[in-house]
Length: 282
Length: 306
Image 1 (cartoon, rainbow over the protein chains, first blue to last red):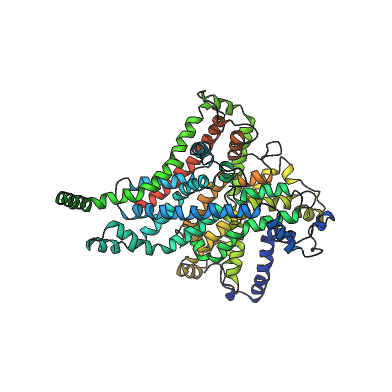
Image 2 (tube, rainbow over the protein chains, first blue to last red; image 1 turned 135 degrees about the vertical axis):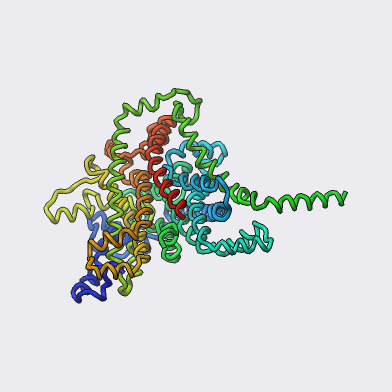
């Protein structure tokens, strides 16, 4: 193990390491802790310039209740769910198939199709912006949730294919060969043999895509406009405009907006990290 | 009749049976490739095309040839954006050593270390919109923590986001926070896979600290470094959310980057100049293409080696 395991070092370093850990963590998360403290403060604290001191009273419940009752926040959150969940399902469904095709079959254009997905996944969003907006407008889907979902599915398929294909490559190929000898059809090989083995990859991609899409801001601004379809990342800016300088409410709103992916991460940590490392770093 | 149709069926089936291994990949690929072509690949070419037109997004397009690019050549805002993009690229790469540093710090087996690791990773999971907001307050000249700390050292208040000289660096630091967390997790997973025997061998040979890191650990972390490099470069060139939230390109356009300037030209109150916006996007795309080509080339080599 590197660096030298702490148990094998001097007593003083062991103690300082243990003390350093929480200190470093607090320093690292200071901006977030600040927002968390802001979100439970009463409005009066900000008018009295008590920004970083202890809250003069605990108003957490009132502030968070206000976020849910006195703004469009619930609607934005719901929109985010309706955008994120179908995207995850769609992208995972498409990429299990593309990943299977590129991972199992040998044909000449295989690597080029694979590279098309990888390269497309890396392009700057701006080169797609004008045509995709135009396409969405022409389909009558501008400012609708399906309009956003369709684009997200298509774009995420690039990343998901990269991941799925590499994952399938690592599966034992003899399994598939044996099934072919038995005369099992290709579709059944996919459905009954490969798909069950892909469960970890599917889980990893699901949490990862959930986070990516939930946190998307650019496409939300480009393809949607109003409260009827905008997700919470775009909604938070209108929320902040509504409560300008009401720092306690803006903080509470931000925390509410940030929470779902955070919860997802803590629940599915192992899968999440497997996904982030693209399965390449084991 | 019934006889004919059944014989036709068996014939079709046997034809399918013979060729299914050839056809199956295309059937599996069809929906994904179709989606990707329509929404990602074709739009790239369409953008190239639109960049030769003057177009407000609604009326008729007017062909202007290379005029948009010529205008770009004389546009000061374009050069500001380009310069800022370069600063982003260079400074954003600091996330890699910083992530490695934190990963080395956390790569221990003391109680509760798993929770520490996930809490350190926290910033990456949060939306950049929220990160931007948090750092805007952190930099705030009246109540921001930064200026309170600076005041302790007798240093005057700095309005980071309101000063042309500091604004880009200020935003990049906000961006480094989640990006460092990402690189950290890549290295933590990488460190897990480092061969303990090589470390022991190195120790016997008297390698320690920096030397050990450089000659024995880092070579084994190459896959992690490669991915960290890829995601950081892409992230740097994609920077949009933070700029939009923290400064909206200001003050006086000093914090613009190409991705933001393009959006501003094509879709904001500045007007709807789709053609000009597309020209900016093409330039950004060409910059990115150099990196994409390099990434693909590295991947191709690895595929061949397998």
